[in-house]
Image (cartoon, rainbow, N blue to C red; front, side, top):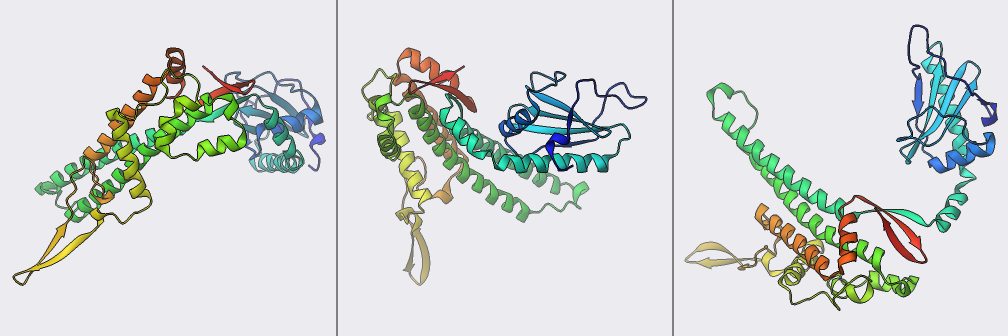
Length: 359
């Protein structure tokens, strides 16, 4: 097959194989091409889709073709991908695969000439979907804590088992337990940073949705985006619509607790050589001692000393600061924002420069 127009529109029902009640495809290929381009290419070549036998909850367009003794379906799937399905009465999988790959190659070649069209329609698009980094990072942190709890249970279970005479052959050892505990500490460190990043995502979504129209010019927007996170939080009511307070109260304990997390995060992420990373060697009566700086904070400034209780406290501080932001909002805006901010994807529509969330 050398050209797409060698495919012939087929308006009948795909025949079932002998002795079968339902038709079964012989090969399925998912093109690595945006479904919009697949649709555009096929529409320009063959006209509007001709298929109507598909699940409308999962697919919205479909073409059915024949080529020699093959039947072909090309359709979209859940808005994010497309498929080439090949059917053959003789169930020749090898030939079906070659045909699917040939169609895919032709679509891929044609799509290279259409990529500029994507940029054009994106520029004019009024609706978009925001992937919510707040949910992504927050749920990742929660999952890491759950994984650390699983490690705890595993260590307890295996440690108990190796003490029973009936399980002397088990390979799990004390050193294995220590190794798992080290990995658990890695999870604590990762979860802590994920919780901190989640609130940055929360604030970024807030600004994306509610930043005042007059501040959305590129240079202003970029300047606001580069603000220190605590400043950006405090002045959100100045820059964004939908707030009943003039600023977020920096005297509130929830704000202060969050600020301590931010300072810790900066030390952790930038690997700052803070005092808690220093230990001192002293000699006394010909004996050697190691002394450490005291750290009386509720969360240690040394990332290596993070424990479950510290990460859980960080989670609480993040939950608290989120609630503080909610409290600063006007009732209508708060209700709207709460209804979408915990969704993994947020659909919005641009109405005269204002992004309106769609529920």
